[in-house]
Image (tube, rainbow, N blue to C red; front, top):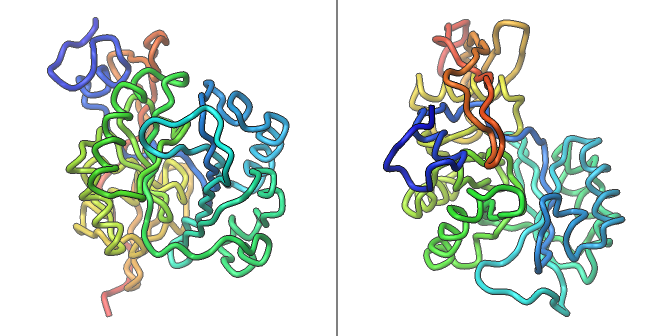
Length: 315
């Protein structure tokens, strides 16, 4: 049965199903200890690293190297109209998402292939000095940036809902928002990643997107629409958000996922307290598509039980 609703989007879009069925956000962020994104104007195909004006051999090889060390690679474009080819340097952002070692570097390269010099292991382990030493034209960036998925070749929702969000954000936070080729979770469009923390939010509006950016400036996040922090596994994302909700904790680096077993995830607060969170997987009903144009299926959704206090005390 196709749901009907008054939410943004047209009937049949995967985001329309997602809104109507009130699919939970936690545990739907991608998993990555670090991010590397490079500006590549022009059209993007569904697999942009190899289907764009970026050299496909470089795109495929660099993407493969990033995956080996749990780093996410992607393409970005500046908001608004842009030429298919641009004779200028390319903006690059490199981020570590690890709590206590979150940082963002930015700079420009004459050719994206210069990223081959970047120490991806350093990015993955949060070693900023080593990352800069490997590519010295990267410098620390003090303000978080926002990546909004807009690639209509990957999913229709991202173009229909993501591009208007980018346009609105560009007016309210100029220089801090970029179109992105793919962030995962099309059904949560418009969806965005905030770097350097790697938090991902879904079903954003211009107001909520700005609120998350303002929170990121304070070293905090917003619980509304929070899909997870890419640092953690998907089960870890679910558990961390459950503890955040229990405490009303907004500080980005206040919580860490410190252990997982088959049934539970352990989350620790910087003040020494810790909780164990039951995390289960259940089949969602009714079936729904995870991307536009795909057939509905019995999707599994992660769910958190009530966090159980283990030990420790605020100091």
